[in-house]
Structure formats: structure tokens, C-alpha cells
Length: 82
Image (cartoon, rainbow, N blue to C red; front, top):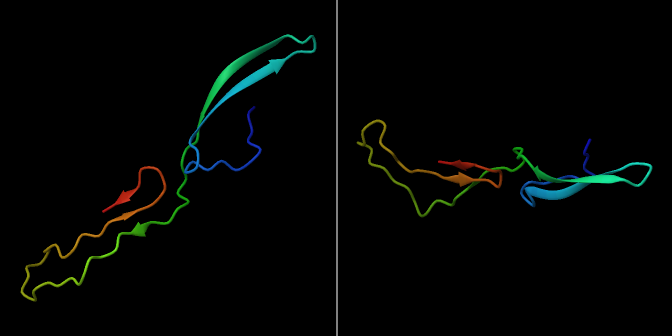
């Protein structure tokens, strides 16, 4: 069993390369390389990109007219919100 002695944050470091080693009472051992990939949790709030200037639309604009497209990102893996 492999346990972490501290909190692992994917945004800081997402891959750890370690060597696991087992030693018996006679001093004989074996070792194995371990690649630990940290998965992401949704621990960051989205941040909207600022709106550039005022937004206006004609009162006669048809229904479903695109008024403005907003965009947000967050530091979690794979998140881009449009």
C-alpha cells in the first residue's frame, strides 16, 4: 500500500516518479519504479474574462440573437467554459 504523507495538489504537480523498495530480514531487496499520476478534483472556482466596454442590442433584434459570448476558465484540468 502506498500512502501520501501530505496533501497532493494536481495544479502544483501532477506526476510523481518514485522508486518503491522492499527489503527482507536478510537484507535482500527488490525495487520498482512507480509513476503516480494525480487526478483532478473540482477545487477551483471559475473566473470570467472581463467584458470589453458596454454591450448594446437593438430593441427590434430577433429572438435568439447572440448578444455577447462570455468566457470563463478555472485552474482545474480540462475546464474552459463558453
